[in-house]
Length: 512
Image 1 (tube, rainbow, N blue to C red):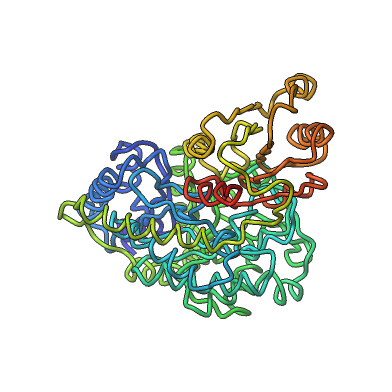
Image 2: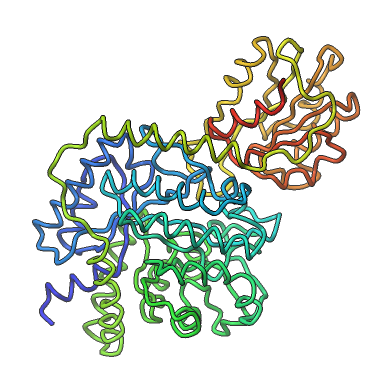
């Protein structure tokens, strides 16, 4: 194999990210020197639909000029709900658990089809969604509302329809995080989770959504940075494991692309090292290694693989084999540069239709857990709202998309509502001292973000409120399982996410 073809083959085994809103020297080198097959975008690369469209057109033109055999495949984490990279100018569609709570699988198809329609319009043809994990551990710090359900069977039904919806728009879907990240209490962005289930248990439970997605011919599966000691005796996380690849290929008869989660996450970087992990993953039959951020690591990893394919015949044969799968993936979903301009009217029309869809799904979602106390409220009542500053809960979340429009929505209902907002870093003593004169209010609305345990400031403040009045209503702005730490709460609503559309529906349920 001549050198350029060898470099192209190796490059196709990587998906990389970069900083900036335009083509820079970093990504130019990745394309023109290393022929990377795929690129992942984050909010750091996204400003508006027109800007994304132009960026991707420029990237594709660069690849075409460099002599690529297939178009670049541009990917993004557009799960919707809490995890979304494209915001300004794009529709705010419901996340998985909000959709799952409707009980209508058609909503999964329609919502993910709408999302994929917008992605394809700007040139993105690989969505790293849907989440196929089952959130069967309420203490899970990274999955939560990203999952359709805590029921294996229900999650499977919704996953299958989500895949169909995405791929109906010529966008590749991704089942993640195989073989299941739901039953963990550790965020793999920070350290390596361990799950003690064996293969038989997984086949009957955690893998049901993956089986359902594979049955719909899903284009890709992402491996989790989770260690399963009863399956992988070599001590490797699923993302690097030949046994997990075998489980997918042999037991589940999966023929599509297998990609790692980002190999810069601490579960990998701190335990094994990004470069060594890349080598292990590709040697063990994984098709594509993801290195999302650091140019030096991307360069070193690709150079290492280039050296290995030259010096190790078995390694070369392994990559030649997996390259066949990748080439089919790129040929099926890749699209070359679109030289036409992106119409604002086209985008606005899509956004209007998809926004109406989102509203309808939120209306159907099962937000109300309890409705008691003095509800419904009147817009003339005196209302105190206890809120907390939103913060990154897991590194998969986006610091640019943490705005919670609750105050504006409440003030549309009760113009003189009083907000008491606490920092989660506040000392309990200082915070509790601020809660005086509670008798001046007809109602208290307590909002929460992922209460971790009974010592959490949010839970302490709730208990203080309950000592003064029984009429405390709760809205869980992110995690429906916060109710575990809110004893005897009589009104509890969980919109599953803090997007404007979701909060409007949730707040409306409290009033006449």
